[in-house]
Image (cartoon, rainbow, N blue to C red):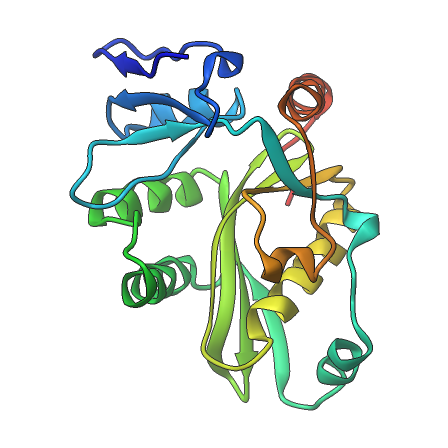
Length: 222
């Protein structure tokens, strides 16, 4: 399949037109209207700082069904240790900046300064959210993502203390269950996510769930 070049118009080709590796389109920008249209159609940006924006919709989508979250015996013991606290939306800026630094130290980060500004604006709009793990009142891990209908679209996570990001994910999942969310979108699988219970579903199934949840969700309560 061809990879589409985006114009100044705020539009995307249908996700089913993506290449085999999931790459759908190149170009455009990270303005709010374009990002929201992307997420509402199961498309997400992922690119290196020196590249133009790349937009993806993989044929198999990594997801976690909240009720299927795996919590190992060792993690249950870790959760019982004194000193841990998970907070929500109290320091979105520090979470996304830590995610940027961790990714830059590993394989390079798509979380550019423009990216941070735009997602912070989405946070101020009540669309992007953070879960923050504190240990003895020090931020040691966390994650951020967007809410789309009944789906939490996970973006990135970081940890400075072993298991801190997993603790954030576990507490986030508990909150999503309480609020009636149906799915956590993990985009692309990895061993860390698999250990928490992620599995892959076909793009068509993911999109059906997304479109239904966008239609049925009555509020953006998080």
